[in-house]
Length: 418
Image (cartoon, rainbow, N blue to C red; front, side, top):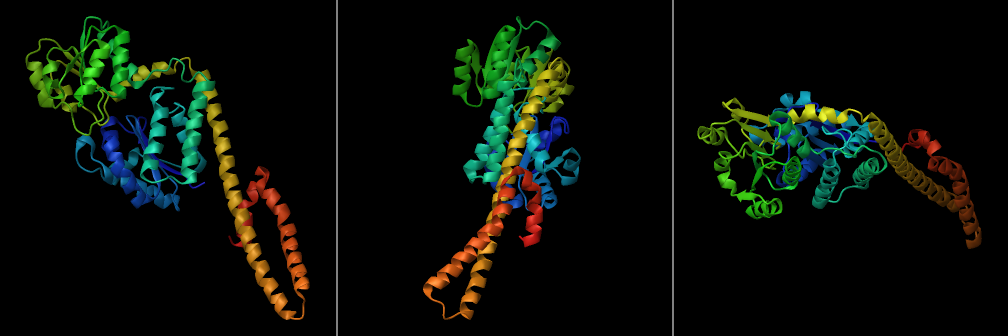
């Protein structure tokens, strides 16, 4: 099973590294063809907590080198400058074969997320697959891998409690704000971002009873729409810096490859304030210049600071984890059986084609040595040769079609030189 995974996530790399190899939706449109050219067919899964590349290379070792080189040379994030391979290497993990498939199944099932059981990742896995397929149709192997992972994710949520009362990154972020500031009912929040993540933040803020919400978004219509739904105020994206002055909390959740707020923007806003400012940056790449954390009165957190709150989400949920892991292993077994059956079918086809080529060649030789045969006699000899080949291959074919006979696959290929 030549599946290869090369990637990094929240457990192996801090946000300042992850943001350098994260892909916005716009960047994926250019990155996937580049990946195909440099490392072969593949799917890129890029979220706030991970960037992973799944491919099926001819040579896994060479494929690992090619994918690492692709990641290092593709993006620069908000940090600027292409990442050197040697700098990126310590943060990368490589998985091959069934281990790579298991990793994807666990990701899809919410078992490898910072927030255990969070629901967004299942949709992100599906989007990664459809985005790659829209550029060029995926092979049956890659398509089946991702469809199986998605089925594993659905089953884990339907059949276990892994997704029960699970938080999202957005809800966890609001919990972090509450943990730091306490009651939010009298506070004013500026929310930058009206996409899916921003909408989830808004829902969490409403549930927390926050005093006032102001919404900003690159697309003004979206900000206005959300503001109407929330009975909030909308401001122009270019007026964000000014809106900070009247806000107690700023939460950003924008899919953007440049800083939304520079340290100069935050500095200017703080000059007219007499109180501290809490900023939660949920963007990857980061939306806020990290230098803003050095300013007096500014409390700046990013997505990696959610880890403590996320850890609490694990408490008392071990039974759900065990059950979800069993679903993953069940789906992994189904996928492995499909993969083996597909390989068995290919071997059977190759053996039969080789046997038929040999039969026809030897039959032709034999008939040339017997020129006096009638058409009926020649037909009888040909029928006998077909029957002989079919009978010789019957038992091996039956054995290879049976999962118990799969260990013979390599032996058959070696014996027949396939």
